[in-house]
Image (cartoon, rainbow, N blue to C red; front, side, top):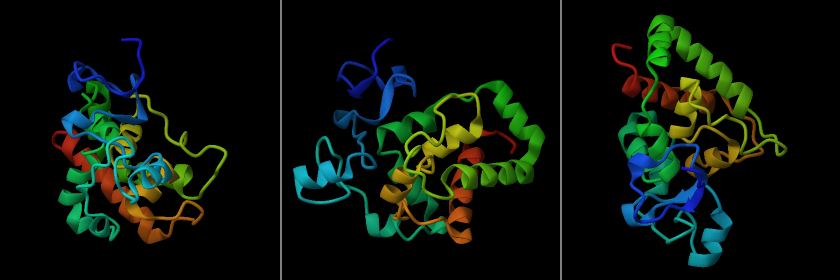
Length: 193
């Protein structure tokens, strides 16, 4: 499939989508898969309010609840993230066997430390030159997949989803929250973790 869609055609099933043929701003609104984190200003201008899909105006997310950044409300946070097409793709992507084995061999504590280090390096502070490209989309690294699935991939997504201003350096508490989200992804995707 050579296409890279912004608006995925109705006849293309979600099972045929991958990080390589969609963009962060892609939508499939008829399947209730939207884009909330890109084009926030465009959505506000078009629909007169923030926090809606820039393509169709869908607004089923309780942003006040999400913006509390309460890891104890992770079930709701993860359900909400999966209403965004790009997050759903990274959540449902099949993890390669070698990545699962590597994660199992490294163990929970080592992988958590590695994830925290990557998060701090990639999104710990804002860099307008590279924002939006801070985390590679390749499927060769489970941390990359987790960051895209949990909207901890770049400062623009972090601001849209978790109300953490782009220009602000992450606090230890915010970094811990992001790490916890990534760990939830590992718990879901790595058996016997």
